Structures are given as C-alpha cells and as structure tokens.
Image (cartoon, rainbow, N blue to C red; front, side, top):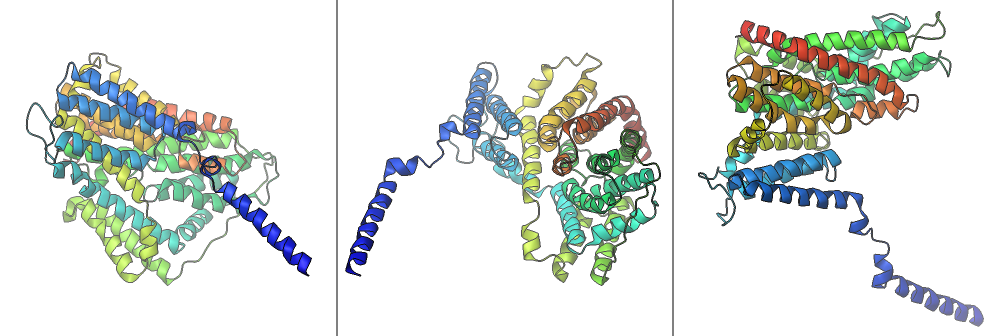
Length: 498
C-alpha cells in the first residue's frame, strides 16, 4: 500500500510537471492560430491597404471627402467580394467609417468635408430607421410565425394535392408553391421547408432516376425566382427601394409586384419546361403522391393575419397606409399574443437588416460626397449597351458573391448613371434600380451562388453541372428579358399607376 502511494505521488509530480511545461508561453502559443497564416486576416489587411492607396490617389485630384468615400467604397467592395469579414460586419464598418471620416462629429482636423459643411451624423444613421427595414421586419415576423405554427408545410402540402400525381405537374406545383412562399418568406427558409416535402416523393423512385434531381433543383430555382416578386422577397429589392426613395421616388408594394411578376412568371415557366425535359423520369408510368398536413387553430390565426397583411400591402393606394406601417400589424399582433416570443424574436435575421442599412448608407455617402458623379464620368454613357453591360455585370458578380452585397455596390451606381443621363424624374431611374435588383436575384449558376442552391446541393443528389445548366439558362434568360423588355414594362406601369 505504501509503495502504491509513493507511485501515485510520483505520477502526480510527473503529471504536474508536464502540465507546467504545457502552460509555458511558447507551448501555449503553438495552439493559437497565427493571424498572418489566417486567410481572412490576410484578405482584410490587403483590402485595407488597397483602400488606403485608393484614398491617397484620389486626394491628388479630388476633394478630401470624395477621396475618403472612394476608399470606403473600395474597402466595402473587396470585403464583400472576399467575405474576409461577415457581410453584415462590413456593412457596419462602412457606417462607422462614414460617420468618422465624413460627418466628423468630433470635429477632428484632417477629416470631414473640405468643400462645404459636414453632414450631420444623424443623417448617416437614418437608414437604420428606413421604412424598408420595418417592411422587412414585418416579413421576417410573418415567416417566423408561419414556420413556428407549421403553416408553411400545411399550406404547401395542401396546395400540392391540387396538382395531381403526374411528375411534371407535381414539379410545377412544387415550383409555384416555392415561388409563392419566397415572395413573402426568406428564400433560404422556403427552400429548407420545400426540400423536406420532396423527400417523401422519392419513395417510389429508383436511385438513378433523373426525376430525383429534377424535383430537388426545381426548388432552389423557384425560390430564387420567386424572391423577385415582392419588395420583401429578397434583400436586393429592399436596397433598390431604399436608394430610389433617396431620389424622391416611391415604389409601392403593388407597384413592385406588377412590374416584377411578368418576369417571375416567364422565368418560372422557362425553368419548369427545361427541368421537366432534362430530368424526365425513366419510368413513364410513375406517379407521385403528396400527403396533406392539417392546420390547427393557431395556424388558422396566423393565416388570417398573414392574409390581412398582404391585403393591406397590395391595397395601400386605397387606404393610404404605407407598406411599412402595414408591416407593423403582424409585428404587434404576433408578439402581443405570444405567437412570437422573445426567443423567436431574438432569432430573426437581424444581420440582413444591418446589411441592407449598410448598403443604403454606402449609396448615401456616394451621393453626399459626389463620388457617384465622379464614377459615372468614368463610364462611357454614350455607349448604347452600357445599361445592358451593367446588368450583365450584376449577374456575373452575384454568381460569385452575395447578391445583396452586389446590389449594394451596383444599384447606387446605376441609379446615379440614370439620374445624370436622363434626369431624376425619368422612368430610366426606376428601371435601373429595379433591374439591377432583379438581375442580382437571377444569378444562380453555381452551388455557392445563393443559399437555396447550397441547401439543395447539400442533399448530395445534384452536381455543379446541374446548377450550371439550369441556373445558367435562367440567368441568361433574365438578362435578355430585363435588357429588352424591362424599359417598356416599367415605363408602361409607371404611367398607368400614377
């Protein structure tokens, strides 16, 4: 027993000595990821350096505020493209830099405006209270209540029963239901929900049946397309509305829908025909059966508030309540009745609101400093294809980065280009604002292009080439339709809805 105790003490001393050695600084630091070996740190540092170089170069020819804003724009663009910082973090960084370097509330020397008075910092913070953010908050609350009470799955499964059991019709039903939900819910949440409804349809399908791919890829395609249909369907839509409002142009909920829905219908129909042909079932006699899900009393209450809110949004011209005010209805009702509790409220997509606000602030800074005019002067506006090229650039950029970030960068540039070329009251200003937003949502040619694509890809059924074929076709068709038909449709509805 005595020998055992001696051995135990010896073991404890050796173990303690080992722990002391491990606690040494050099040993401990070996477990810490070194910043210079961190890819994101390197990209952030490189972005800051390039932004500083841009600022110094502009200082030689432009006013100080334009140089500062140019550096902020380059920094935001690089960080949004590389995602060295989270997207919302870059948006908040943009707001902070504009307050310090442009508004200069501390009245420090060497920063601020040299060609006039500094803008008040409250003006730069105003986008955090922009009505479009309240509109999006209402949409988030509606979506959260629908998901929590199972209304989304219940409605989707019930509607799918209407389309029968033929594979092509079930696929059409899946796409229409997905697009419909995506107009009022997050595209990501809609895709996740609809993908779960696809799984039971696989029961009667063989492992190598192409229809498996078709049923999955039709969901993200429809979610991306459906997000174009309403102002709350996708963040780029809100960005466009915010920038247009800064130009004194109000786009109502119904106005957006009547302009965007023709494009949504065209792209949905084209995508359905393509997917139906490419991924036809190897068994021509196969039938797909969907199972309806019941809705309880709480679900009926959610549907009632949901329907009333949408009705108020679509009839704002008659009752006079702005869409943002109507959006407060579900916010107040669902939180007051406990449908949305504190936990649900805390889990809303607040980062999206910060990203939208950051984009609006970026455009505001460009306008306040005159950077937008400087950038427009660099574009050959006499080229008749410059607008189409801007839309193409939006799609290409959105394929490889967040479509909201791409919209934040290109929408203010497009609106400034149209304002300087045609005047602030022209329909071209609306055309460019809406077209760039819609084009950014049409970029879906890779699994990484949008969260809905990533969710579908994660199922392990689809390959990158599937997204290239279907998403590439939809993106190309969207560019053609927006470039050729957009001006006519927007001009017609702008005149008709006055």
